Amino acid sequence: MYIVISGIFLFTFGHMFKRLFPSLREYIDRKFGEKLGKGFVGLFLVSGFLLISFGYYHNEFDIYLYYSPPWLYAVTHLMMFCSLGLITLKEAPFGHASRLKKYFKHPMLTGLIVWSASHLLINGTLMAVILFGGLGVWGAIEIYLLEKNNSNAPEPEESQGTLIGDMSFLGRIILIYVILILIHIYLGGNVYPFL
Image 1 (spheres, rainbow, N blue to C red):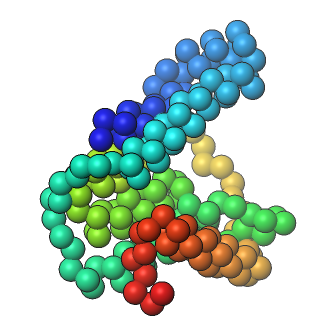
Image 2: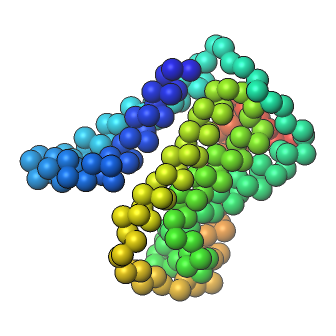
């Protein structure tokens, strides 16, 4: 459990480093170069991800805080599908963005919060609450910090998106969702009653 908590701390700290310590990040970039500065922050991200993965899947003790009714699994799948859409919404392959892009200011972080909530619906263990709840709270704090730092900045002009962008967007979600299903099954977490 402490491994997962340490991983969450390193992972979120790496992402928030620039916003929490902008002058220090600027100093590191000036002193060692922007690439080495990003590499320094990247160490936190990679270390955090590895600790989270290892700690969560090799945890030998856990406590069930609540149990979920079977019908919540369908809600979880729908929320997961939506979260993948939000996380990949800003992508614009071959210059074609989705028309939904203009409706979300922070789609990736919003998608992370939806992803966290969807996992909490069907994972009632203490470890799951720490992991998914922690990442969801981090996503909300990141949005707050971004809004606070950019409150006076002008809104960037966004492309309106195209029909091709919408079709590409839907295709990406389906492909990623299928890959995630296979990964979950491989790791022993089959929550797909249709398989």
